[in-house]
Length: 405
Image (cartoon, rainbow, N blue to C red; front, side, top):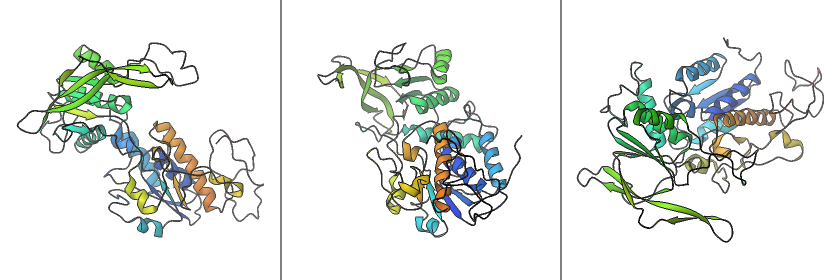
């Protein structure tokens, strides 16, 4: 059982963290331990970001998140919810009271499917569906996906509906699992790419991530409850079909595609003639990945983005190398997590937050090495900590060890 351990001293420096997902929470925890005052801004009504609303409760009990947040509060971290920095709260208000800022906003700009009739009712982004489902459950302890009222205001319910999830990955799989629990009539998952092989191909050697056929929990649950694997491979959605009267979706027109390499070795998609098919659907969930962080805040702060639309960060040469690769083009503004590296796993977000915290700590110490943990070993110092060192902290180590950034 973990008990709160507030820092033994305070530096007087203040850090604002925008976003309370894995990266934001990890950074806040470390910077608070370093003795800085930390305030975390979260636009939703609960702290946790992706951990709270992006991952369904059957995968991550929200009590675990709440308990960790309560522990951090008891240790001195300040959380502000309902605070949408940029669109609703001017970023200058955050700047004025902060010695450094960490952007940990996630990669939340969803990839859309711009085909005819996209504006029909019943077509939603996956994260909207998952978020509203989780909020419904958290607002009433007696509610589960199985007993939610389909008529509940604001809820997107799959109960009794033919559901199509377009796109795979963890988010698509979570949509499938949630729809099973809500009592969908049928569930189909469209994948544009062909079915992966059972074993690694010659072009996919270790240690590359294995591109092989796998069954996740959502697929297994559909197999158990409906008697079939929900996935349809090499399917291209061509048009959403209207019910003709209420403006709701009633299905998707599709075509099969084949994949062949051109003369340069690049994969090319070709529609298969005569393979057109209509799939009935009362609810369509778009789970095709994300295009990067939302831009309004970045534009206000004049923070640059890279070619993939992620927040661009830079390596600092010379005596600034302790800031690592997490500072943006704006001095004192750092980035961590999916908004910096692109959508990824929670463990990567946590690592990003911890390493960004080191970079911020070094920045606040005017370039001196941070005492905070580093991935792969202890920190290489510029020199030993001595008793007359004004920057020394209680318990600081003088050990020098290799570091892997």
